[in-house]
Image (cartoon, rainbow, N blue to C red):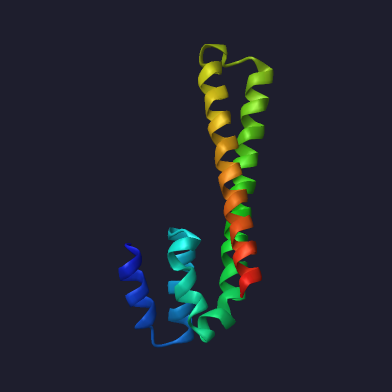
Length: 118
């Protein structure tokens, strides 16, 4: 969803649950730079941001854990030598997983840094 549409949906939210749901969408789908002013300009959004941050960080941790499990399984397969014909592809996939892990870790750091501003 485009950020402007999401901000409109957020501002039209009637309940705290709707606000939290829309803030979560905003945090998950967009860069902090895009929504920072929206949250900082609204005291209520700022006050519930810790809940949103915790929810999103828990999801990030689950994603990271899943990626690490996949990497471990690839390592196991490479050690067993069963898949020599596709070992290059497995190693390439492992590099992509490493990159994704880095991205989710950076996303979590960004959330932590933003939270310090609030």
